[in-house]
Image (cartoon, rainbow, N blue to C red):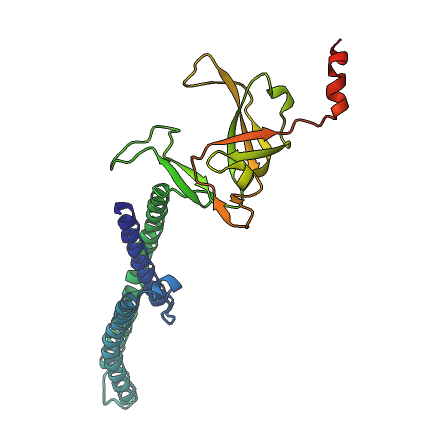
Length: 293
């Protein structure tokens, strides 16, 4: 994608800046060339920077070696001339000329080295700035890329997709898709009448019966009440009716027949839920009319 391309481009520029900074740091400090691990992953870049490092050092040594040779010859001539002054065979002016020439050559050697290090320091400062800037760009573009990738918190099956067109816009807090988790449990949404909600609370045992499977053959799914909506919800179809939304988490995600064969529950299946609100004996039912009286 375009965002992935931008991140890749920025990462390449960052690695290039890091390689340049490593080379210049070695030039300034006069140490062997060592690259960061990220740079080592690009052999071509390592080869190019190493060649440039060697070339620049060779150019410096060549320019200095010529001056050193000239200085050595002047010093030899000076060594031979100084004893002749005492004998009157050479003038002091000649000695002064040779000393001045030797001093000039030494200054040229020092200047060549200084220019090399000053230039390397200036380039290193710029390379460090470029590296920092590219790091910030990579962070920003990586963050943008991460925001374009949606990851579900659990493994599941896509049930509904709200946006199906290229370039479609998702409103703030809008729904992109519905994902039904694939694990060893199911989350069943049930509707409870307001007249029955007083007897329902989290933790109660429940029995989920899938209408697509005959309960007498396949049985049901055992579960427990986990969440109860804090208030009633108006029915979207029957506007005069209200209900509480209750979620039941099952112990299993499959039904089994008498032979032990498993049958999967797919998203969208309809179920009825029996919630155990308590236990009564036969005597309780017989005494109920008298208790009301």
